[in-house]
Image (cartoon, rainbow, N blue to C red; front, side, top):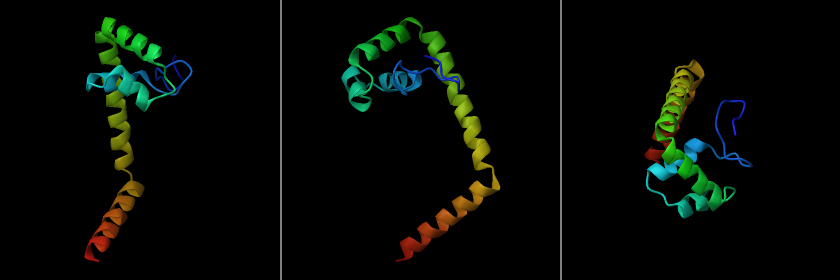
Length: 100
């Protein structure tokens, strides 16, 4: 199911295709994926993984595009003065805590 933001999510949940496939790629079993996302049934996970394996090139391209967009947004946020100030303050507080 496509959401307005362009993401593909498991029907009836907020869990993304990206999430399920990534967990599968790192070696999680279907049961482990289900434990992490109990709103997605084992049958749904199995269907998603089967579909992924049959459409791996397209799904990998989709995931690569999503990862690139995520990285672009991260860099955009981290380049703002507000983020830089927040980060400096965080590092200052950590340094203070380490002194005690």
